[in-house]
Length: 285
Image 1 (tube, rainbow, N blue to C red):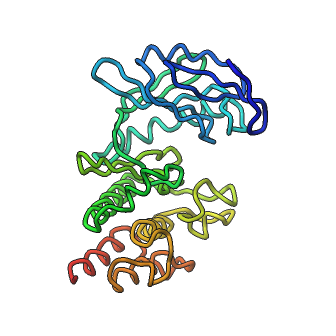
Image 2 (image 1 turned 45 degrees about the vertical axis):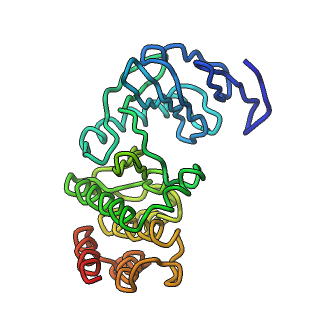
Image 3 (image 1 turned 30 degrees about the horizontal axis):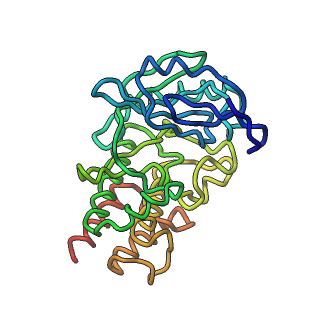
């Protein structure tokens, strides 16, 4: 191990199967061999989780592990473990062709691990500039399919009684070889009714509605209409909400603009209503 200066404390550089990662202090990660050989490590999360790509024979897995002292997390290991455990029923309830596939979860290595099937899909998030650039260079037809998949998943989630929380561009993946949208990181999705008990909630401000900054506000399907509008601007205007940045029709721009109204009463009042207005405009092109 090697110590370097970084973040809020001295940072330990460790490695698994030749791949380096950072921790605040030493932690025995040898239990990962139960899942296979490490080929990828994500150590820059602020959730308290370390994430790994592992290969076992011809199978590959994405593993989230809580319990280790990650460099960007400021809470306790037990809190991180508790939160990760709470995600399991969410992934089970919302199993869907466009959601990364949950495999199993277990206590191991002094913490808690959740396994998913690995996907070769690339991320739209700003934290991955190369894959983001590839994502933004997709054809409008492909982007529209991605958006349709996102809308369909969130209509499904609402029908199952869930509200989306902390969904942003880093949750959107695309498998270029298979031509398939994949979604990930739905850890904070919650059963309705749900009330903002935090003030500023989790998430990227570019995707968050005014009520997600308002203590005591209801977080519901109208909140998620805002999220769908913000996602449309991320895909079709690179986040800008001005007409000259928009690459689709004026009618579709107006549908997205309505969705991100600060006044809840001016938005579409359900995801199906947003989908219908979007489809009508799209069909008229």
